[in-house]
Structure formats: C-alpha cells, structure tokens
Length: 369
Image (cartoon, rainbow, N blue to C red; front, side, top):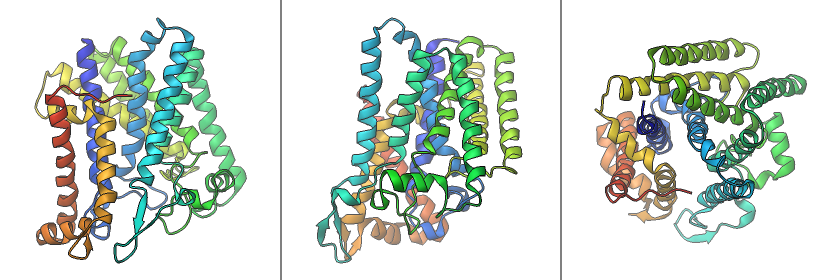
C-alpha cells in the first residue's frame, strides 16, 4: 500500500469525523434533535459520543507518519515544533470560545464579555494537551512504554473514582480539580451549572486514544496491505469494544468524564472504522464518496474553526428581532418538520463549511500548524 493511500484513508477518517462533528454541533433546535445526534446525558453512549475520541485517535494516527521525520531532526527542532503546535492549538481553542469577544442582551444590545467569564478548557485545548503530552512520551521513550502508561492511566483513573465514592455531574473528582485550578467562572456552564466535559483530569485518559491512534497507524503502515492485517485490526477492535462494555458494569461508560470503559469502547470503534476505510479505499479501490470526506480531512482544523466561529455570530446578529440562527431555522427549515428540520439545518450548515473546504482544495490551499 502506497503512502498516499494510507494518507488517503486517514484523510477520509478525519474528514468523516469533522463532518459528523459539525452536524452534531449545529442542530437547528436542540429540543427536537434526533437522539443519535445528541450526547448521552450522563452514563451511556450514542454515535455522537464517538466524534471527539475519534478526532484524538486521528491525531495519534497522524503522528505515526511524522515520527520518522523527527528522527532526522535535532532535539531542539522537535521540541520547538511540539511546544509551538501545542501552544497554538490551545490558544486557538481558547480564543474560539471567547470570539467574538462581546455578548448581547435580550434586545441585542452589546455588552462586555470579560476575561473572567471565559471558558479555559475545551475541545481544541484537550487536543493540544493530548498532542503535546503524547508527542513527548513517544519521542523520549520506546513505543512499548506508552502501552504500559496507557494501562496505568486507565486503571489509576478508575481507582480515583472508586476512592471518591458515589459521584454525579455536580460532584465528581474531575469537577473538584477544575474548580481548584480554574475557578467556577472559567468552566463550561452549558448544563446550567459549572462543569466542564473537557476537564483537566479527564484529559489524561484522552491520551490513551492518541496512543491507540499512533499504534494503529504504525500497524497499517507495516501490515495493513494484507487481508490478515485488516482482519487483525478488526479483531482488536472487537476485543476492545467488548472489554469496554464489560468494564461498563464496574466503571460506567461516560463521555463527560471520559471514563476508562469509554476509552476502550471508542478506541475499538475507531480502529474498526479505520480498518474498513483502508479496506474500501485500498483493497477495493473504491473512490465513490471518498473525495467528499477528503475535503474535510485535508483542512481539518481550518474547517472546524470556521464552523465554530460562524455560529456565535449568528446568535449575536439579529434578523427581525431574532438571533439569525433561530430566524433561519424557523423560517427556512421548520416547514420540513420539527426533527427533520433541525437535522436539515445542521446538514446544510455542514455543506456550507464543506464548500469553503472545496474551494481551498481546488486552490491547493492547506492550512496547517
């Protein structure tokens, strides 16, 4: 299998992840959203809960292609690259949640959005931290060390919760640590109270998703061209999925806490999906539908940022006395039905973001950090 084909499979996997992420993040009306397009409220799992860990898995997969290049670079060059990329991604995530740096009241009058009210952690921030930590571990230690470290993290995280005792969304070790580190005002309040689903402590089990992506990428490069290799990937995926479901009885699958059982389940699903994409693009030589996801996969960060920056503007810019987000949904999409209209809104928004990616691809513009 040529390098381009392996990269193609990764671009498609990454593209599918971003495509689905945009759809689930921009429902026209959260009150009438199809259940599979919502995160599990607490314990449990929906297809939406696979999106973020799949993104981290893709980060690790990408690293498997660049580690050999790092061997030809000086330590200073590698560390500069790692820390610079980590800082920029983290900063972009932080500024993305702050954008457009002002709020509006019920009458759309401008009001301040001070630093003290900003959310410190988030999706890109977790990606940055996981990328930075995983890169350092893989650079300084042998790959097998990251396997031992992964097992230690998952077990230690489980023991922390066992020692904590009964927990819920408002009382758990992740929230307790975040309150100590950042304070209540810098946490996510989307649940109606302070609790960040991308908390600092729950970032560490996210590292395991990155390590898994790295090992899957290395395995595909070395053995992915054989049917036996694809079968082995699918077998590992099945074992991890089953183990995750079994662990669920002792440590519930929970995306917002990023529990150890959730990690194994999402890694198993990510490995299985990537193996099927490699089979489709390389073994069957199929191209149908591939380019659509390639567009997302080639400019992943740029398209994701675009999708997240337009939405807050739509909530702040009014049309006929309503937020334009609400006005567009109610006037253009509700005629299609409450649930289908909410989905169609997000689907069309995803296509809008895709069209920007398409133009960038046609002009051979690829924005990377």
